[in-house]
Every structure is written in C-alpha cells, then in structure tokens.
Image (cartoon, rainbow, N blue to C red; front, side, top):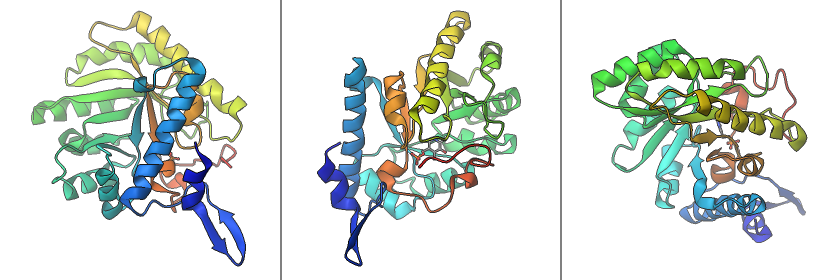
Amino acid sequence: MPLQTRSRNSAHALGGSIITSPYPTAQSVEDFRSNLAAVRERIAAACARVGRAPAEVRLLPVSKTVSEARIRLAYAAGCRELGENKVQEASRKAEAMADLTDLRWSVIGHLQTNKAKVVARFASEFQALDNLRGAEALDRRLQAEGRALDVLVQVNTSGETSKFGLPPDDVPGFVRELPAFSSLRVRGLMTLALLSADPARVRPCFILLRELRERVRQAAPAGIAMDELSMGMSGDFELAVEEGATVVRVGQAIFGARELPDSHYWPEAGSSSEQRS
Ligand SMILES: *Cc1c(COP(=O)(O)O)cnc(C)c1O
C-alpha cells in the first residue's frame, strides 16, 4: 500500500514524538474510503504476485464492536456486506440498520444451537458451521422462515484446541451429511489461521485449507459447491490471498483497532499460542 495512505491517518504527534498505530480508527467516510482502497490495493498486489485476478477475492469487512454510527459511515463509503462474530450483536445491528435494505450480514463466529432461529431471520451467510446439530437447527428454522442461507464449513487448521472448527480429517464425512439440509447452500470452507506474526507458521494453515478443499471436492455429493475459501484477516490476508483465498475477513485494517481483546470473541484465544505482534 502507498505509505502516505497509512501515515496520514495514523501518525499522532505526542510529546514531540510520533507514535504510529497500525490500525488507526476510521472516523469519516473519507477515512473508510481510503482504508477500503488500501486493503483492495494490497489484495490486488497479492493477487499479482501469484497470477490471480483481484475479482476472484471478495472483501468481507468485519464490524464487530463497531458502533452503528461508524458502520453507517462505512456504508456511505461503499460497504454493502458486513461480518459479525456474535449472533446477538449482529442481529441487534441488523435490526437497527434495517433501513439500509441492501446491506447483507454474514455471521462468522460460533453458533449456539439455541440462536439458530435468530440467524435464520437476518443473516445472508453463516461461515462457522462445524456440527450437525447446528446444521439441523439452522435448516429447520430456515424452512420455517422460507429462507435459504449460504454456509461455509469451519475447519481448525491450526491444531489449537481452543479454536472452533472441525479437525481437517472430519470434514469430508461431515460434508457428505449436508445434502440432508436443503435450506443450507454449502459454498466452501473457512478457517482462522494460527495467531502468529511468523508467516512460516501461518501459511501452512492456508495451504492445508486449500488442499482440503480439493480432497472434499472429489468426494462431494451433488449440489454441494466447494468453491469458496474464507481465510485471512487484517494481519494475514495477503498470505491467504497468495494461497487461494476467495473471501478475506478484514476488520481492524478497515475500521481501526478494537479495544476488546480477541479472547472475547475467540474463547481462550491467546492462551495456547503466541499473539500477533
Ligand atoms: C474478528 C474476526 C476477523 C477479523 O479480524 P481483524 O483482525 O479485525 O481483521 C476475521 N474472522 C473472524 C472469525 C473474526 O472473529
């Protein structure tokens, strides 16, 4: 990304020295436009390195913890879909912003079965499917609403016990069960990579997901699409794009740093792994 784009927002004069935050808070439509453009530029550069077309990569802005007022600025800057980790937070926001009729909501965090009804009402996508009870509950609620939902199967590619998602070896068998749930439109796989600042440890998670997609594809039942790979966040989306991501979920690089620690969203995150720098 061009250096100016970042430093214009992020350099704060403090006591005569300059402190640079990697994720300054976007406060205006203009900030959002430039952050979105910067992320898209970095996606395009990653694509160019491996001979992919940038149009193959969908940017899903992640708005967890972000206030309605700031989300409306992002909408004004062109965001038409948002990812949220928690069902209650997402549905509250979707309701408050129901006037933005072309705004779509993607739930990207763990679903408790008793919240399936809520997701079936407002979400247009669910990226964290990892158990049959959840699939069954969602399908039943969707039937009742007369709706269908795009879903991705979440895979634990890092081997960390604290993460949600199926172990890779369980995925082919799990996917074979999914045609039973006719309101779920299965699109592909999703993962969270290892939380590490070291690309040599992060990249293998993305490679694993891509290779798993090929395995699952060969055995996939009719009607199950396995095209999407949702992988990569603010700290690692360029690596993910290089390894084949078709969806990147980017929060802080668009909205700014979050105050809540990630452990609020990923139970036990950080307790079993080093943190990103
Ligand atoms: C928060 C979150 C992201 C985005 O993380 P950033 O560091 O804000 O880019 C991506 N995926 C999931 C599942 C998340 O909960």
